[in-house]
Length: 231
Ligand code: PL3
Ligand code: FE2
Ligand code: FE2
Image (cartoon, rainbow, N blue to C red; front, top):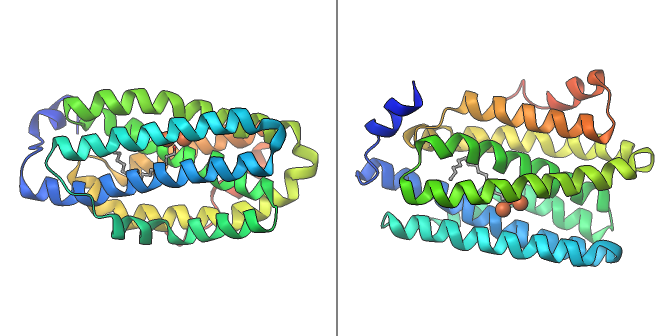
């Protein structure tokens, strides 16, 4: 559907929209909160980059507040319990990797997977958002590119040592993204966002990131389809 038509047709105040928004808004709030915590943990694990990582954590905290305001603006109460369940597996994998000092896995989960997921979701949301949320989301998505860039640069600089762990972490965590997308498909559509567009945008961001880090086209194909067939 053309984007202009969609933004005219969407009733931001009907019950169906607000019900779907209570879950999607919660997911985004929880995602930004986890991103804050994850960059704080990464700052401990990478003392040389601590100042930069703590500044990313602060940005994530601002993002969370911005999206909380978006929900309030529509009179929606975010369903945070739903959102914590939504992130539980990815959250658990990050915690486990951090406890084992596996920095490469932590960076793949946060700076590649979560940031690419956020960039795809926010880019698809912007044209169908209400005016208030659109302005907030436009500001946020610019930051997310710089977070993705941090992960790319670090992993590129350490590619030879990181490669095997990246492949393993990808295999373990990418299938979770496809499961998560399936869980939000119905709600996202009510907000005017198509799953196919989300998958496509994610694939483009994630594939470009892997390319910048140093993977070959063949490796990228194999890695980014991991778990997709089951979705
Ligand atoms: C990292 O900085 C933030 C992590 C947030 C993750 C967001 C995932 C969103 C998936 C749900 C799709 C709909 C998004 C709607 C945008 C308001
Ligand atoms: Fe963010
Ligand atoms: Fe981010």
